[in-house]
Image (cartoon, rainbow, N blue to C red; front, top):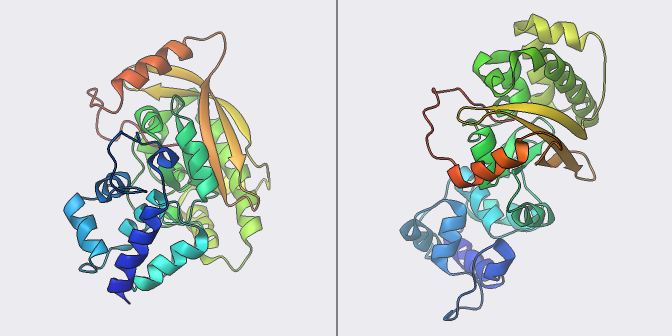
Length: 287
């Protein structure tokens, strides 16, 4: 652990990023070539005072904060790993909630300003999402590892299914299991997290066990679905996927289905945002 070096490294990465690179206004009176400390704090979801203390070498950030800072500063995988090592934290394994998101994928996400979009792992763990995705799908669940993923929660937490109409549940369950089988095979027998999750689901969910026994496999690249929003009702969307080369992550974005009222509802959603619309606790769960 070297917190002094950590502070210098953060400042050097901050200086190289222009506000427009991360969707922030440039403004006419900037005294620094890159991002200001308050801008990095905003992007990482930290207080300004806390981030200043990090650059001074006076605090050891948590693993969650390191993941948020790495994304805010668009660090490469090597830079992300270096950040964790300087902070004296273990480098997170691939596939968890702190997994590295490539700067290129984050750049694409930033450009989808008027479209709900998020980046997830192959275990359907949400890594990052934009404001409209949170408004449409709800906040990412707390927790770490593959058990924070939507597929695991689909078969273990009944409230997770409130996102879709009941008559669509069987189709989604089949799709999730077929997609999961492809991901688990790609990870291999040595991946304890993924294989341990499957073992738990086989033990605890008869529905999952029945679907798993069919050996269906299909990587989901595009789907049309109906999403239940607590204020706007059912919204018909096309869910499109862009996969990384190794298939470990995917960028999802949601577009309105032509011939439905989804366009109007998504436009209204951009105005409503994530304000509390009298939804019952747990009524929405992320995709």
